[in-house]
Image (cartoon, rainbow, N blue to C red; front, top):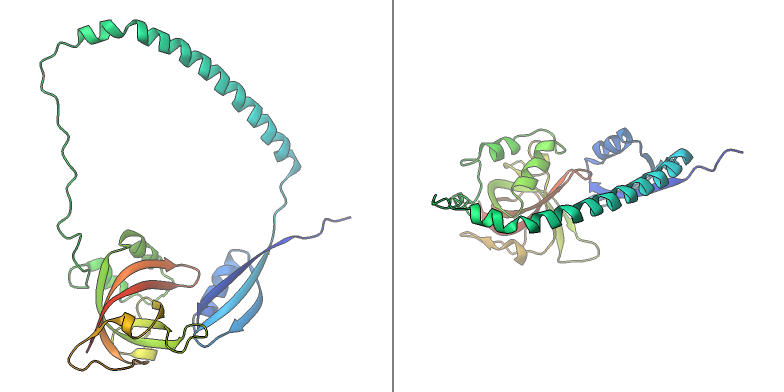
Amino acid sequence: MADEIKYEYKTVKTVRGIDGRTISKMQEEGWELTEQVPGTLRCTLTFRRAKKPLPRFLIGAGAAVLLLLAVVIGVASALSGGDEKKDQSGKSTAVGAKTSNAPTPTSTPPKIESTAAEVITSQNSSKFAALLKTADHCDEANLDFATKYKGRKIAFDGSIVDMAPHGDYDTRYDLLLGPGDEGPQTADGPAFKYEDVNVFDLKLTGKRVPATVGEGDKFRFVAEVSEFNPIQCLFYLDPVSTKVR
């Protein structure tokens, strides 16, 4: 009688409009889509994948490896004890032989980049300039940049691509941002996201500060790099300041 297939499950939330890419990526990794629940801004996807049974011979092999490891540790411990005694017996000789008058080398402190606190822009960073022009929201360049510059501040001219209430809140939102002035028609650049923020969190500045914001509004965003989620293809940021353009 064949063994019953056992599955592992994974739920993924992705941005509306790029859920197709997420599904394709998961299917390439062997996942099967079982449920798709669309939302205002995000789409919830549920996948399953058959668990691979552990071969029985590996279980026996694992026990043998543990036994061998225990023997090796025991032998190594015994040998190290003998070496320690030898080291102690020759300690005075070694100390007495150290008669060199050569100066003790001093370690050079690591050089700290003067630009560590500088806000990253397309003008002072070629990597960020290239990132803002990438045509694929899921490109690995997003993950590389987010990993290297996590906690650093970036600044760019952009617009609100999409805006929706966060959960059941009326005054807290999820904002999808893009570089440039195209708003919902933005095609290039990362899918930057502010999650669970209100208007005050944006720290709006400028000559005419609006009471509310919406899709298509253009700003000069200054934000702190948080992380990139390669499954959702979302580049998460934390707002620092938002200047009206």
